[in-house]
Length: 153
Length: 101
Image (tube, rainbow over all chains, first blue to last red; front, side):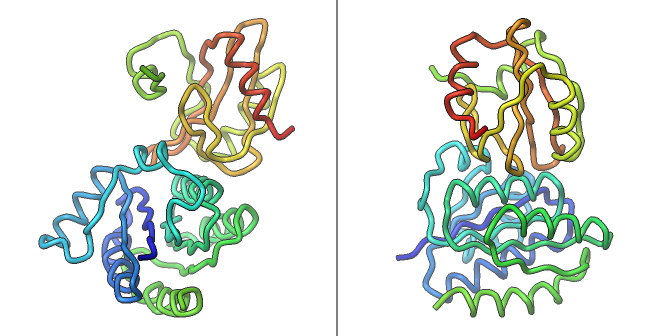
């Protein structure tokens, strides 16, 4: 079974948790075994959103995951890049794994959004799903559906 | 037992934080301004047993006379810090060996 890693950033942005649950659902439907890596606080939000662990099957602390990561440990990386630190984490995971990747870039400030997009674009070959978003995950969900369809056969 | 950078930073007081809760770019600039020698490494390269997080090329500052290095240190909710900490000469050699330039 192919393996996907969903990389969560700081859970401060309200769109991250629903989009992560949704992405896990879509990737499971496509036949992936999905692991979610995040901080304890990001993971707590996931656990409460998915109490029967339909989508949160495999979970791992983000720093433990990074420490043990090797090239090709997963077949697909999907990461949230919605803060400066999240962009750095995504780029780092991308460079270690070297697998097809999707970056979910979102911010309410258009200048920051552009900067995060530019950093991901210049540092990786990841497919970028981006939108000016904060509370409303719908624009990103629509674009994520397209990206998954394009990348996952 | 392997070295744990996070534990070290929690339990030691011989390091200096040059910038904290900042963006990676600002930390990269501070590192380059405060070191006598700069080398660049790939994201995820291990220094002191910890993977270094950032946007390539990642600068690592080396002050060989002081016996210190300056590294970017990123946490998901706190951004990036530039931290100067003492290291053995052997560690500096290891960093130079994995440097891209």
